[in-house]
Length: 332
Image (tube, rainbow, N blue to C red; front, top):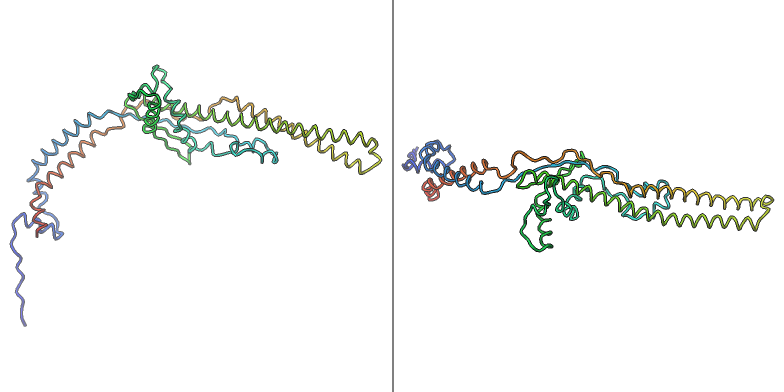
């Protein structure tokens, strides 16, 4: 039986042995020793990167974020429901007067970011100053059209709105370099949203009133026509008691008059309700948590940025110092 001679591995130096151990998946037992050996250059690199990151973060202006929370008041009307059991009239209602999810949080979120809402916010000013939000932004644009466009875009970038479908709460957050302006502008967004919703409610009520007024005219004409037919029938048939057919015909004509008068009375009540809704000036939203000037800034996180820069600089410095081992690893 022939015995094979044992395989003799080539001798390696300390650094080659580390690379060999790393390559074959064994634990890097000497890595802590290498970290200790390179501790001074790594510390210098981390300190330099930390100083640069800290100095650079000081050049970034602080941002303060303020949040206001509100819910929409559920007074959105549906013209088809307002008309009650008048099915024939309700079928003529235009789609714009029907219910369309106007009381949902997503609807409030959409209204808060409309251009009309943004323009109201830009023209508003806090109670403690006469400067408007547009003046405070100080965009440095002379052309009025470009200024408004830039201002609307700036507001859209600074505001963040989330809607909770389960609770119906809309959260509106706005950031500014001044903590007091951030709270004032967030409140201005809420007030502008309420104003836009009120205008929408009044315009829909006015449209419904015009619709009901047209239906009232038609119902009045119907009543007049029914009464005229009954009058003509009574003139032509003075002795209807002696004829059952004439009596039945007269009863039918009387029922037409009663139905037309009932429809006319209902439409009068609905028109009065629509007129009241048109002049209604109650709030369309309920403010749950008004915006307050924040104490702490929301950006930049200087401590985190400095630590990340120090960690990255230390890792890069260690990789540079161990480049010889990495080259030998690749060549082997």
